[in-house]
Image (cartoon, rainbow, N blue to C red; front, side):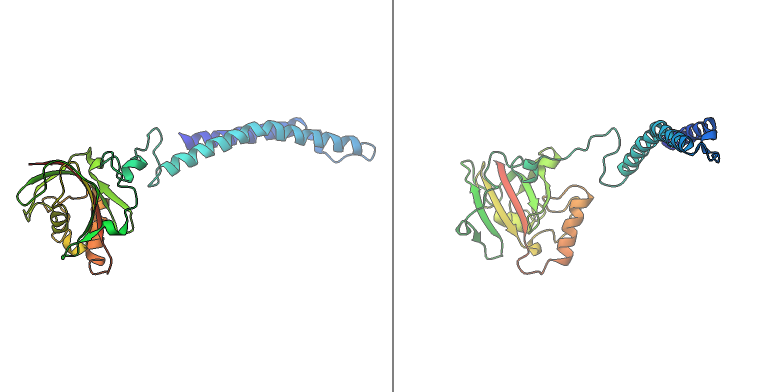
Length: 249
């Protein structure tokens, strides 16, 4: 028990100090006029002895307290519990490059690369595919990265072991409206950045069974709930989806 260790070390240090004082009690008695210099010297020696020997106990106390602080901090949200390794995604996952394969999606695209649909959806091709084209009625497999309009990473298919989002183009229960519109015209193997107004996103909610792709976990879903509730009518607010079509059939 950590608290017991701390108490024990404190007791050891106290006993050591008392023992040293008792064994050198004469050094602290009122001196006679003829022995003042010698007594003062003795006192200094005793004090140095107490400090040097007591440092062992004090060091043990500091070490134990440090361990105790670390153990306590580890129980605070965001700290790693003792003996456990915090698992985090690498930066390339957070930036989406691992989810999208060997694309150049992290590069800044020129303004002229973006196209705007009548609905308000904006998209830009990051890399062109050479496979089958995404059309009405086609079933699509895709990898995805979701960000807020400020670029803040929310979630990606890489977080869920790169399980693709699969839906049929044109199915109202498949993908959110903005994705269903923005993905058309892509070809298998291609990568596209799609900016979706919130009103064309999760209007039915972000719970299981709703149009996707759906963020996994409470935190990412709660972020999207707040966007849909508080920022749906904010001018210039978009949901960023970077998608890579892996299969069209």
